[in-house]
Image 1: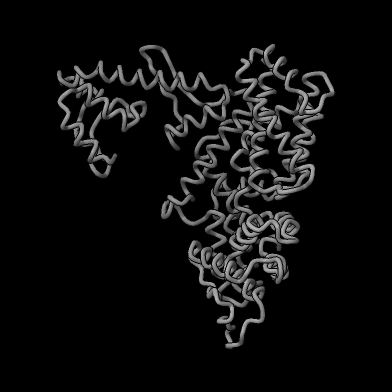
Image 2 (image 1 turned 90 degrees about the vertical axis):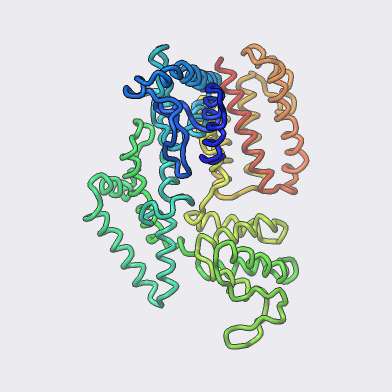
Length: 492
């Protein structure tokens, strides 16, 4: 509901308790600083329901509402406290807090009358909590300033804005080498003479391979903002410095040769439809969108010789990041075309800096946590890390899934002190979990994840057959979850 609708509902309600109920369902009482007001269209305070300031306390009617405020405040406080206490995983606690309070979450909520306090600040001796907290802060503030809703908030100094401006320059000049060298020079001059001292130190350290240690201490907002500025500039410098940040023509041609191969590749109709969709989404003009290949002519009016020529021409209309995403998406969409898997692997390995989102991003925090938990089980740790490295390179073949299965199998063998195969661990695992206080129902759920994964592995992976990107990522997520839950249960 918008502010006006909420204000009208509250104004029309004669009962004060119900006014509080309407207000507290739509606004966060823990963040109100003792001021309960309706708001106008712009969010400005309109009419008081309750206020704790000294002047308002003198108003007898306002004073009558103090007990109601305390009741609703305590209720919200206690609900959040219970939710946090019932969640043992710090990363999930932090997500609860961020989902509720957003970017302004770096605070402590207190209840002096009951001597209670709520905070999400990490324990000073927990490097893992500190790292999780700082990484979350980094992502939130970066998105706040450079994300899709941040237009006009700050200057366009983030990586993607710099790349866009740079590519716009390249598209308008035949002297690409001079633009590249001038841009490098300007960037280094900016961060050696014009940047603030702390930003300059961060930038210089990044150049020297010394990133900020996110595990050492909780970073305050000014530190994070300075580091974000320095890191975005450093990433752009890497972009300029590395030849493989621009996809070479020979690779674009090779991509067309594979994906648009005459007999087994995409048809021209499929190609035209796909590129038209991408052109609209990215606001790009492509030279060839007509689905009738016979209508295609080049700038001289000559007929296009084959669909691969038009494919490359369309691909060149996009910037390097978009080219990467297009080739990557087509490889995932048409995995049965001969040579596509090898093409995708080469794309990820040779041009990994252009990759905007890794398939590991969504579960990155949990993966890092499991890596730490597996440090006590080196036999299981090695294949798990090997699997993660393969996923980072875009490899979704049987070797990556073999590594995940092996990691889980070796972990259970070590924990259960036997040499049984994964399929035959059901009885021993449930008995082990029971000794650790895990209920039979939860043990059944865990095995309910393991059993179908072993069947999938035996049916598809062993034969290197029908292994898709979505299946692989789901197995990675499930295996990571199972490893985490079993290790945590064993420590009880």
